[in-house]
Amino acid sequence: MPLETTSASAAAGKSSAEGKSAAVTTRTEARERAARNRKLRVYAARVAVLLAFLGLWELCARTEVIDPFNFSQPSRIWEQIRQWVTHGTAQGSLGEQIGYTLYEALTGWVIGVVGGVLLGIALGRIRFLADVFGPYIKVLNAIPRIVLAPIFLIWFGLGPASKVASAVVLVFFPVFFNAFQGAREVDRNLVANARILGADNRKVTLQVVIPAATTWIFTSLHVSFGFALIGAIVGEYIGATKGLGLLVAAAQGTFNAAGVYAAMTILAVVALLTEGLLTFAEKKLFRWKPADAGDGR
Image (cartoon, rainbow, N blue to C red):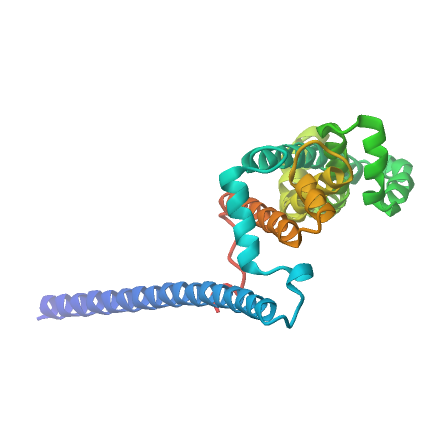
């Protein structure tokens, strides 16, 4: 009898555990399904908003509620993009213009990010350097950086160097300030524990400070690439031989509103694709981070 009672208790306990496990699995699946459904609803709502906006714009232009010459209309913009894709532009193929602008923006972005991170970490770690260079950086940051584009054009000419320089100055400062703040916000207990374990300044910087500041740095990367595109486009708009900014300037010069909007649309697509790549890289790099509280709503 005692053996039978024990066996029955074990069986009941196993059955209860299996029931709890099944309940947990069911709840997890329900949460995942709800999250997928919410994501689909968000995407559907985004598409609906875009289609409604474009439809209203087209309707207002066709009924002349707005002037189609000045404001153009989505159908004309699409036709302009189609012509650029199939027949090219006056400056060359559309792919060449996109590649030229992307080269300038990416080059300026990389240089600005590297310089901003290195200088931000250095000044965040070495207070003497921060005290010496801090006022100069504040003064440079106060200068409207877009007005530097004509100066760079005079210095470096119509080639890509002037556009890269414009992108660098726009990217550097947001990255620098985020890296600087990230280095300053490192948990002092982590630094103290690393020193107790025998880490020198170099190891503390590489193994504690930089990993802790990575979140701050990645936050600035999302914004800074948009700034790099702005720098490249503004430089091309002022003076260039190729690029999307030149397309905007040429379309403006002929009062081709559809051309201006078409170039802006292409830029928006490029920026969104780049933002998606950065978000993907960030998720892969920070897989250990918990999801935001609002993600599952």
